[in-house]
Every structure is written in C-alpha cells, then in structure tokens.
Length: 66
Image (cartoon, rainbow, N blue to C red):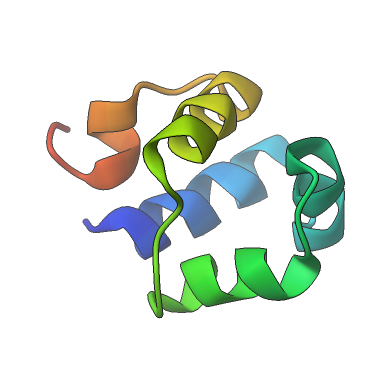
C-alpha cells in the first residue's frame, strides 16, 4: 500500500474525519483531501505529527513496511 491508501485506512480505523484531522494539524481540509487522493504528501515535520495523531510509525504510514 502507499501513503494515500494507508492514510485513508488509518483515518477510517480511528474514525477521524478530514476536517478533524485538519484541525489537529492546523491545516485545511483541502490539504488532507489532496493527501488522501495521492496528489501530494505532507512535509517531514507534518508527517511526524500526523503519525503521532494516528499512532502509527512513519514507515508504516508511507508504506515502507507492513
């Protein structure tokens, strides 16, 4: 799996909406939507904060390990 698939899976698992995640990351819902669609990815600092929120490792979220 790749980042966007993993992000959507983790958001569903934790029952967190794009709006809720955007608020926690101090970003827009449009940004989260672009990540979920695979248009782009977060910068490193945001990636690590995202991983803390979702309680997942960066490697797993990026699809580098199962």
